[in-house]
Image 1 (cartoon, rainbow, N blue to C red):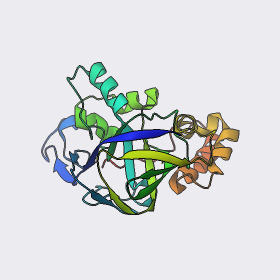
Image 2 (spheres, helix red, strand yellow; image 1 turned 180 degrees about the vertical axis):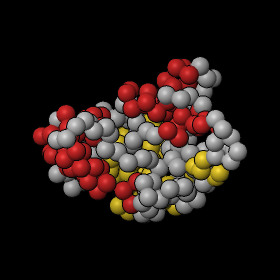
Image 3 (cartoon, helix red, strand yellow; image 1 turned 135 degrees about the vertical axis):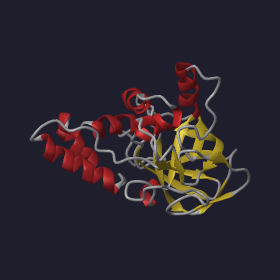
Length: 237
């Protein structure tokens, strides 16, 4: 069965960044919790978020379907090389869990993992947004994350409990073995290009409600013209 090591666990507080008086777009004020710090020892993982973690815009971030965000360390290492950095530590993409051993091709919508006392279920891929670019000062970083498929994913919490770095994520159930995060993301970013797949993905009861609604809206909009990603932001803001 698939498993991963949790290398680090991070939480962050919403903070005001940039300057209120700046004229340049990349220096203007913005609010985000994308800057996250590692936590040592057991941390409570609740149904809507990890204790101590915040989101700046609850309209599109956080909540039961996006309670925990994961990003693979393998991607952070690749980004560090591509961006010319010595390293990108855990939390660099605003994720709660930084892991080793699982990528988007290895994980499916609805997968249930046991980690410490917590039972987690994969709900949707992450949709990279502009705040990644602001975080790292790389204007096209969100676009590059989208194009490479290095997105990470979200969990909902089926059983609350304590979790800490060093624990393992152990797969215990896989209801949708053909719907990897990799495949789901490709459909979510352009549902009108593959309407039958979009309908099949939307029919999965384990898919996050916002993603399901976005797929259906994307299909309807696609009848009138191209539509971009139906993903609605991520838990980094």
